[in-house]
Image (cartoon, rainbow, N blue to C red):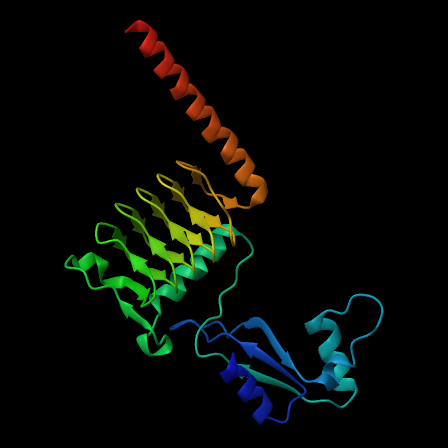
Length: 238
C-alpha cells in the first residue's frame, strides 16, 4: 500500500487507476483491478446526491473539469473475488507468490517432511511438534496450532487464531482471533474474525459467522445429547 501511495503521490494525477498485469502469453489486454487512488481534488468532484459510478461517472466528470486521470500497472494481479470460493482462489494465488523478504519475522517451517516446506510461519506463532502442515499455508503472528491438528493448504491462519487439539482444516481461511476448539473439521470454509466455534464443529463450503455458529452449536449439542443417552443405556444394560 505504501508503494502504491508513493507512486500516486509522485505523479501529477488527481486519480490513479490501477491495472492488473496481463496474463503471460495472453493476447487480452490488462484489466482494471478496481483499485483507485485519488486526491482530495477528485473527491470534491463527486456529486452530493445520487450514485456516481467511478469508471462511467466520476472519470468523465474529472476530465471535463480538466483534472488528470492516470493509469498505472500493478506488479502482480490484485485478485478479484465476489464470494467464498473466489476469495479462497485468490488466497491460493497469493500464497503461491509469497516472498520471504516481504515478510520480516516469518520463516519457512523447519520440519523433516519435505511436504511441510511451504508452510510460512510467523516467529511468534506456536505450532505443536505433532501438528501436520501441508502447504501452501501461512500462519500469522500469535497463532496457536495444537497437538495432532492437520492443516492442508492452501490455507491462511491469521493473527491470534487458536486451533486446538485434533482439528482438521482443508483449503480454508481462518480470520484473526478466531478459536477452533478440539476436533473441529473445516473444508473450504472461511471463519470470520473472533468467531468462537465449539468442540467437534464440522462445516464444508461455508462462511462461518455468529449466525452460523448458533446452528453449529445446536448440532454439536444434539450429538452430545445422543452420546449421553447411549452412555445411559449402556449403563442400564450393564
